[in-house]
Length: 66
Image (cartoon, rainbow, N blue to C red; front, side, top):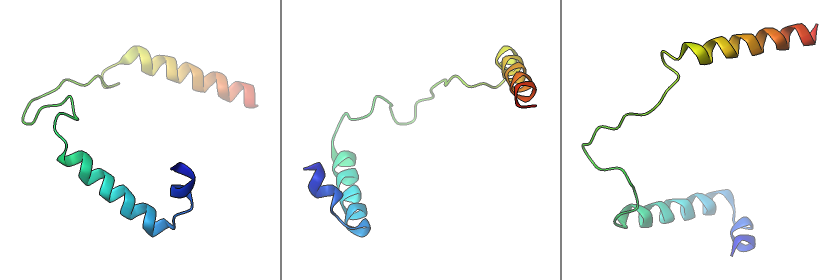
C-alpha cells in the first residue's frame, strides 16, 4: 500500500490525509484525553537545573568551536 501512496501527487496525498483524519475523528476511544478535563504537562518552565546544564553545554560547545 505504501508504494502506491508514495506515487500519489501532493494534492492527492493531502486528500488522503484528510480522509484518514476524518475517519480517526469519527472513531471512538482513539484518544486517552477527555474533553473538558485539565492535564498537568511537564515543561521546562522553572526547571533551573536543566537551564544550567544547557548553558554549560552551550559554553562547552563555544570553546570547542574556537
